Amino acid sequence: MDQNYYLLAYNPEAGAMRHYRVDRMTGIRQQPGPREGKDLFEKTDMSTYTTKVFNMFTGEEKRVRLRFASRLVDPVVDRFGEEAFLIPDGEDAFTVTVDVVVSPQFYAWLAPFGADAEILSPPEVREGMVRQLKTLLAVYEKENDT
Image (cartoon, rainbow, N blue to C red; front, side, top):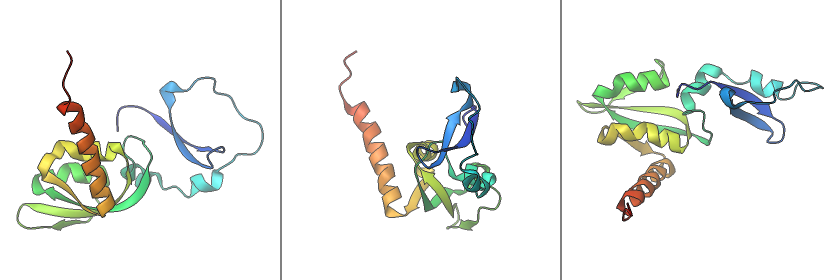
C-alpha cells in the first residue's frame, strides 16, 4: 500500500463501508447503541478486497482485462495474488482478468509500466485511462509562468 494504515468501517450516513486513515483520526469515542453495518462487514473478504482497491480510494468495481509484458509477472502477482490467472499472449506478454475498483490510483498504478501494460477491456475503463493521461498531458502542455 502507501505506508499508511486505514480503518474500514461502516458509515451510517452513507449507508456503506468507508476508508479512514488512522493517523488522521481525532476525537475518537465509543458510540452508544447497537453496532451498525456488522452484516456488511462480515460479508467482506479482506484479502480479496485489498487486491481490488488501490491506495484505499473508492470507485466503481469493474472486471478488467489487462495485458502486460512478460517481465511484469512479479508486480502483477504481487498486486492481484497468486490465484490471478495469467494467460500467455504471444511470446512476450500475458493477459489477466481481475476485479478492480477503478479510480485515478488504479490508473496511476498502471502508468509507470508505460507501453508494457494495457487495459484491453471494458471500453469505459480503457477510455478512463485515456482521459487520465490527457488531463496530465494538458498540465504539461500549458506554458509555465516560472
